[in-house]
Amino acid sequence: MIMIGRLNHVAIAVPDLEAASAQYRSALGAKVGAPQDEPDHGVTVVFIELPNTKIELLYPLGENSPIQGFLDKNPSGGIHHVCYEVEDIIAARDHLKSTGARVLGTGEPKIGAHGKPVLFLHPKDFNGCLVELEQV
Amino acid sequence: MIMIGRLNHVAIAVPDLEAASAQYRSALGAKVGAPQDEPDHGVTVVFIELPNTKIELLYPLGENSPIQGFLDKNPSGGIHHVCYEVEDIIAARDHLKSTGARVLGTGEPKIGAHGKPVLFLHPKDFNGCLVELEQV
Image (cartoon, rainbow over all chains, first blue to last red; front, side, top):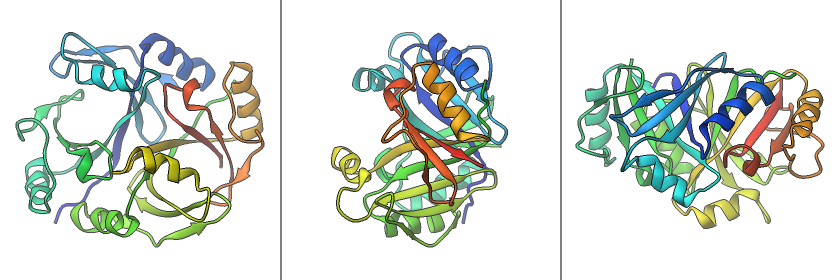
């Protein structure tokens, strides 16, 4: 039995990272960080710190970014995934696989934007919602 | 100047509320509440309590549910909106309107699932992301 913990972040793919950052900073009054390139994930990210969790703005980086196809289908952008924290990502993965859920990619954790192991689960197995698990 | 506060919840529209609730309870080990009908909003909701925020599972209720069209387009379900807390929803609305953002519906707050005033902002004005504001 695993138990998901905190909602680490909600990720929103955006067509214009600078405009989206400015909107969250000025129109919504949020605390907006600096852009960080994540070449291993093919994204540039901006984290918005809310009092209880984060919003992750995602923008394509380099060729074959996993975000590009999403933006092609959703030119205005859109909510891309949610990230739940887990204590033991391997135990969580194996338990979820035993329930029939599919893990994306190689099935092995990669190191995510916070330097922690992450995995993505198939949206079709989670109500059309792409789920990232992050070990904390 | 407004400032958004906590992420109150992330809403996920689901094609089978019982199956989605069971999955969050059993496969993900989360604390899942009982279904609540919200006839004024055309939805039945199930809240999932995470340590820092909530996931709101949404299922259509009655005729003309705003969720039905979303499920017709996304038969597996999908992430539907995010809800940010604000202190003064009228001040927040007026400020956001002054930045060019459109408010959905009549433009006046309705009472949401928590008995608090809520408003929805046009997704096209927020990176394709439907944003709910809730006064707390």
